[in-house]
Amino acid sequence: MKIKLITILFFALLCGNSFAQSSSTTVIELMEKSGSTAMFKQFDEIISAKIAEKKSSFEKGEDFNKFVTVMKSGFNSKNAEKYYLEYFELNTREDSLKSIIHIYESQFMQDMNKIELAASDPAKQQEQLIYFQGLKENPPSPERVQQLITLNNELGISEMTVKILQNMIITMSQGLNSVQPKDKQMSPAELEQKILSSMPANFSEQMTNQIIALSMFTYKDVSNEDLNRYIQVWQTPTGKYFTKNSLEALNYSFSKLGEIIGKSLDVFVKENQK
Image 1 (spheres, rainbow, N blue to C red):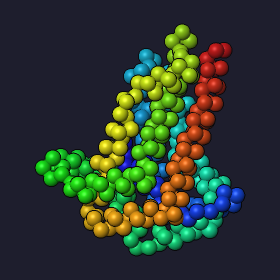
Image 2: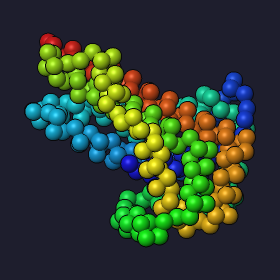
Image 3: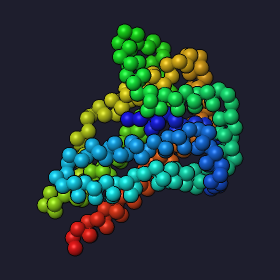
Image 4: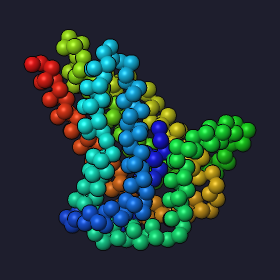
């Protein structure tokens, strides 16, 4: 899974009331400064790869093409970014967003953002492999591992990543189920239960371990002192507030994408029944 989905979405905001709304201009500025805009640019590539994995499940190329059309009607960067932005417009305060934008104008936060963006570049995949191979002989210190665990806990990365993956798998499986012959289809409830029960019991733990490993690569050139300083940003009320809203914005966005796909599936099924 691309590091984009797990590292560059979470940066600071101060607490505020839920009644006020924020302008799209301010939200867009925040997304650009925090790296969220860069993340969404790779969304289509990630989704295309996940959809391609399902191709072998189809006997006919025509059915697979219909499946692709349905999935991409919802799962695309334009929709994902649109609803992510919409959440912030509806649920955050203008002054709160400006406060976090101010935080991101510090040289330290700009440098950390550049480090995260650089590590998530697809061109770095070979470098990642070499780095992970070297971990056997040069493992990180217990102190560094604990720092990364703390960072993951503060940002809630594992929890949200598991939720997003589950939503994606369930939605795609519903699409696959809908294009199957009538006698092979399962009810939505049966399908969801089957998917959730088929996941490893330690799925969340596995995801956390993967995220920690990716974080080792991302922050490999960051000193312990700077990483502690970075963690402290997320431990402030401002940091916690923005982290919470960033995660909720992702969940809101993926829920909306699922609704779009659900409507597309209804149309698809009705057309096949004619």
